[in-house]
Image (cartoon, rainbow, N blue to C red):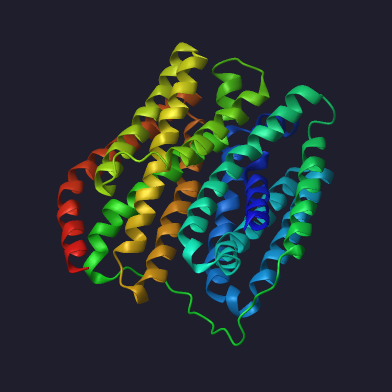
Length: 390
């Protein structure tokens, strides 16, 4: 299990590794905030269909083979970043990384379970989710620290380090036993919410996770520029460490036992999401790094708990035969939040400054949160009835 979790950690690092470097690429290639957010979002545009296709067919292709190919594609993406000399090469690198991680993420969970005893499956999945979030946070932190303190080829050296990490992950993967099942049937690529849970899903599962990824996507794509241009700090490691706090902190806080009831946990978490995002905006108005750190921590708490509660609902509420379609729809909602809203913020920066653009997206998120809190009353009744039926 440990070796596979290390592979998951490294691949997750690679998925977000470039985030701290956006300001450098912005300066080097004269990219606007809109172009930077598109550079961020194109990753998710290619990740999502890859995730759906490979998630349905990966077992029949061979789980370890899919994981091996996904690491090689990530290596190709990293090499393209190293040799990049034009903007199109950056976009191509992000597309390759989206395909790599889309192929990796669902397959990795299935392969991890094959390496784990049945009585430890729940623990393995929980550790996998935490490892993914930690990796997402560590990627920008590592690249930001390298650029800030080594001062050697800032557009190349971070990716040489990532290349070494990916090669290590490939070695660890090859050490793991294959353990494939023969004649594994192909699953249909399907999305769809059962009639009995359409309203609960869209209002209290899909919408919360969309909001998490919306606000998280804004942090990933624009916080480095925000720290530099709004807070006037040239320290590139700050943005990476902020992302580590957002995701790593949110992952660790999932182990906090209170409150136990998932509906109550969801209510608190979506309030924390919007409160944290407003702290970030206020930090821009006051040029306060302390408020920014506080806002990221609070948003991280909200993101971790919201993801945990929403995935719990998506797993528990459908019938077993409905579960794959519902979880696929869950990830569709999640990664949609990585695509449209961050690009919308980038578009808004063509007309307003960055802080005003964040105010507008926060108002949008606040309206969603108000709706979800109101809907939570009827969802709690629905959840209680489903639990009574067993």
